[in-house]
Image 1: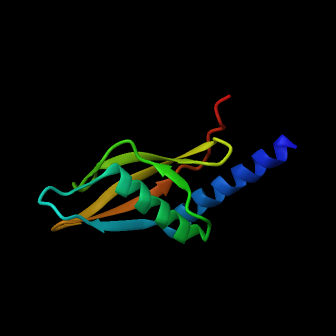
Image 2 (image 1 turned 180 degrees about the vertical axis):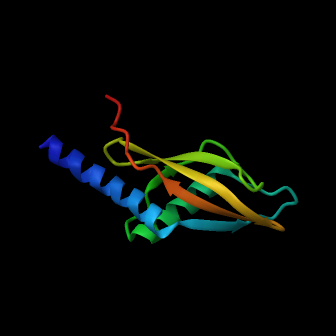
Length: 117
């Protein structure tokens, strides 16, 4: 029953989105250089860990296309990909920078996009 699997995946992605929205997921990372910037790989790992902790679900597959610059108000879009290929957008917004520490909020989109055929 492909429809039931799709519904289960959509529910899982919706649970991640709802959990991120209801709890107000946020994170922070200390970096070891003078220019506050977080690599896209480290950002993806941190977002995955925070979403997993917020939703009590396994760590989702997250990809982030660019580094996060440590400037208040800076945003980047990451993507959560489910096992069936459906995706959910995740916005990361820098809320503050303290010396080399970048603090940010994480907000998942309300709706998932179906897998490409």
